[in-house]
Image 1 (tube, rainbow, N blue to C red):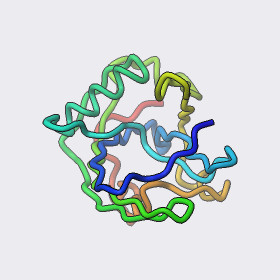
Image 2 (spheres, rainbow, N blue to C red):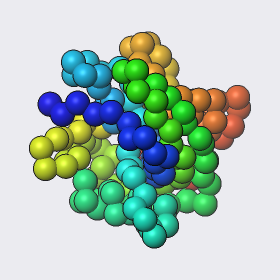
Image 3 (cartoon, helix red, strand yellow):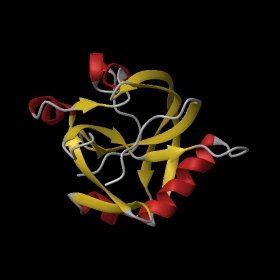
Image 4 (cartoon, helix red, strand yellow):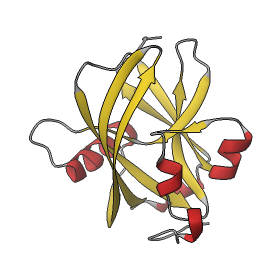
Length: 160
C-alpha cells in the first residue's frame, strides 16, 4: 500500500455528485493502516490547461470506463485540511452528474483502477448511512452544501 501525503501546493480537483434516489456514489478514503475513515465523490486532479468539466469526463473514462453527463449545478469549495500531520490545500469543483449507461445504477459496488498499482471501491450510500457508520464525508463541509440538506432538492435525474 502506498502512503499518500498532500503536496506542498494547491491542488485543483473535480468530483462528480452522482445520485441514486437519496444515495450518493462515494469512494472509500483510507488512512495509513488501510482503515476506511471516510468517503468522497469520485473524480480527480485537474491537469494544467484542462477545464475542470473535461477532467471529470476523462477521470470517469480512465477509471471506470464510463461516460457521464454533467448537469449545470455545481459547487466550488476551498478545502484546507490536515492528513497525518501534513497540511493539504485544494480547490474542489463538485458537479452534479449522471451516468449515460444506466447499468451503473444497478451495481451496488464499483471497483475501479486508481493507478497502475491501486484500486478504489465506490458504493451508493446515503448520508444517514455514512453518519451511522461513523464515517466522514470529504471534502469537509460538503454535507452542508448538498441538495437534500436544509430542504434543498436533489437536482437532475434520480434512479431507483
